Length: 244
Image (cartoon, rainbow, N blue to C red; front, side, top):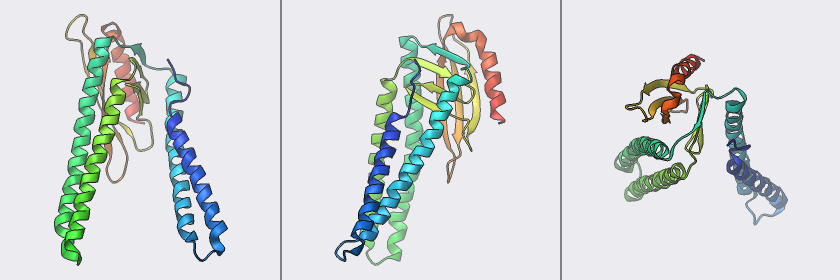
């Protein structure tokens, strides 16, 4: 079932940042004549909140537009998975998510440990600097655990509907777009069903051009056996989209 607006919560969050930014800016200008108030801090935080709001509005506005185009342009595939296939699809995507997040966390923790060893040689408060670096590593580990746990819960509680288009896919309750600037499909693979009633498996790997390095996502879609005859056309359409 199509959701009219997929990203309501991000837009509400952006609205809250926008309102807070306006209030802080107004407070900074109102207190500009009071020597006991640090109006510059209020203005600085107000501008920061406005920038955050603008970034959220812009980013999720584009994603919302791509989500709508998934239906406007006509999906390549749209189906509801049986309970067992949906569970299998969810667990395979969870495994991919955990593997990717663990690899990213290991890289960040490596640099935190490296800085904890190197940076104390350049400052007077050596133990303090080492503690800051190690504390940052602990914070990143906690943040990664919380984010991963949230996404795992979301996937497991998601609906069974799968929608695949030329520029994106909706599955496990989330929308993934690869027709964004700097993004695109990097690998496609399809494994036919092993038995008559078993689902096939479509694996889509796409990269988003995020600096300093692209972020790669892997999606695994369980394809019901009755849709097997549509797969060649689907793969052809996705391959054609890789060059755009």
